[in-house]
Length: 332
Image (cartoon, rainbow, N blue to C red; front, side, top):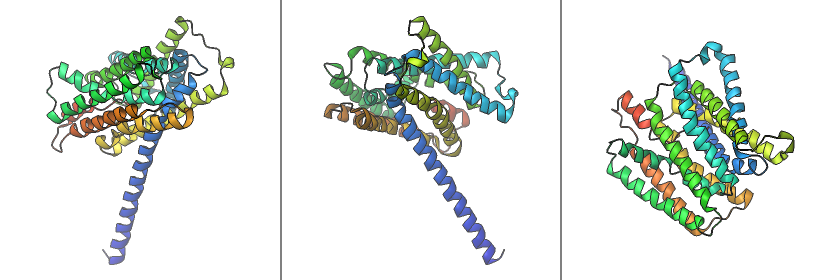
């Protein structure tokens, strides 16, 4: 190999590495900003649209869009699943889109500020550790320290906003329940038989979840009258469908395949910061010093838990899959 050839090969390799790093950076940016902004978009959407019916229509539409892309690229056979796999997807749909996202939507409709909602949902990895403890596992001491620290921060956020604050008390319970459901779904998902293709999983998850939310909304008397909703609500709804459920999720799945899981999981403590900032800038949501302090503690605790749960280099494939349940589930 001549010197010129070696230089050319090195330059091509360097360019490839740089290009890959740029793609990873772009994907992280999408996940950080888009998923961080979904709390704001939900708050705007429910300003003129019923929460459950609106969320149901969002997931149904997003699920159909992803399904069309999958069928176009892989044919109908790509969507074929077994009955057991479909049942697993349906259970996750109830735990994540219906109870996880659905209750967040109801809570924000009731007046929960988007930024504070994001801070409470950021505790999902902490709840996952609690489920692990209840199942008989013994997490590392550093992980437990992060959990205790994080719940202290959650208590500060609730105390600062739930008593005479901008956060209606009943919505605190709704948002916390949403986090509990999302955490249980994230912890339990690896124990279910699901399709091997994560995009197929999310299609059935969104279609089932969207259908259940729509039925619940209509049954509760919400109704669905598209012509009566404001353009502002429709823009927020469309943003949630296209960017929140399709673009950001695709970027997250690509990240899981192209970068370390620990890097992809950093969205768990970046998203709340983005949500609080956007809520303050766009909706002028109140942000008090106790909220900032409590939120900072929650974010720091999540960072501790996520970093302490990184699998070591010698971890087996099965152990890696088990540890992935400690990561917060993707915000579809």
